[in-house]
Image (tube, rainbow, N blue to C red):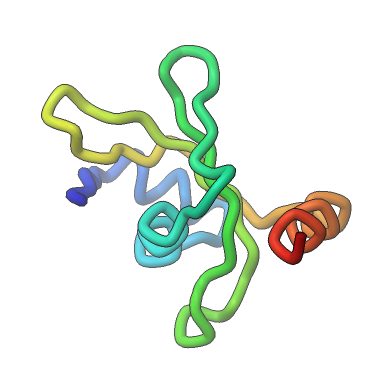
Length: 92
């Protein structure tokens, strides 16, 4: 899996306190039901980063470029309510 980073998406993630390494780890480790296909050919993944990356639970939104590379357009921490839903979903 190849990721495409540029100044725009790296800066956008940083405004939400997320690093490219964290976003990549969420997309790479996505497991059912993620990634979810959304409107406008966007994909959504929720997941937890490794302990080495802080163990945070994040949401990552991305698109697949024509060459199937991943272009992350948004990432943020989950809200407390979203974290509860994520934990329920991952333990069931």
